[in-house]
Length: 471
Ligand SMILES: Cc1ncc(COP(=O)(O)O)c(C=O)c1O
Image (cartoon, rainbow, N blue to C red; front, side):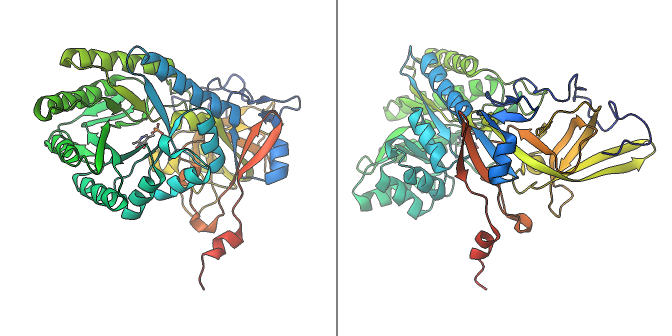
């Protein structure tokens, strides 16, 4: 990389104020990397006992590398933390939210770790069933389920269909009748709480597409309609999901209070006891040094305390509860390896400049930066360097100036074409949101464990892309 004529790039003004100047640009920042990631004797990163050079030799770049031990450990930790926190009451179940990342092998890990699986389309359900995931541990979500999806879920015997509208109640009931089945339904209610990181807002009614409104009285009506159809519908409980990348339990307090008030109203007006609640997912992860996620045990204990307190005040028994973490299990288990291509030092006027590092992927394998303004980190992965740290922007190869993978991070100033770099915490909502924009084939996904590499999803080829082209 060319040093800028304005002098040393040390702490150059391209760095945002939150980004710390690294004491050691080769060091793995604590909390950002999966549990088995380390530097090997040659300085290259190793994950699951496998050098990144070996991974790249086998499957090339861009590649998402899932640390299997890390994924499993996070899954079982959430399972245990919530089970322990709710053990004094009626227990808790954890469903992994497959929308974060799903393939058949990952579904098997989730199954083996004893979690349930939350799917939200027929496609996700198909992956789960192909993996042999037990249907009685699957929940089907979706604000616009097709009749085919509902029928398939009922035929498979899923644990619960999370009904998202008044209209859907009728359709599920009709399909259950055709099948001679009783559909287990949960009702997703809109609590008016929207949580992001440390902030949450609670509004009178929520202007969004999910769920059945609590404030308009629709939720009570929905419960009534389900209870009216005992031949085709069985009410499993209530569901609420308040947001994503949440770091503390404040948002859950208001949501739980509002949902439990509905439980009390149902008891009072309909004489029915709802004994199961699903409080959704949304637990946050560390994408960079600004983020401070709470441990699963802290979240579980905090939410258990909130639910127990609200129940005491309303004179209710604490229901059985469920949670649906996706990002917090899948996200930190995975990193994406890219090969560095073109490096450009762009003059911005006066002494200002920005170093653009292009990689062989981009918004097609990680759209979160463009879509959510996410801030990722990045590390030189194939070697260590003694060079001065300099702030760079990692960009993809797409025809879009918003095609940014990492907005700002320090990398060594001797970064060059052909270097391997790695972006951590890409396990959630990266591959699952991937696209073929510009006809760029999707990357490979591998898992690593105890020195072994396993291909989870092979790299797409141009033939895959052309396979859909009827011309
Ligand atoms: C209903 C529901 N449950 C669970 C999740 C998982 O959220 P996260 O991956 O942030 O834990 C989502 C995410 O959108 C969701 O909509």
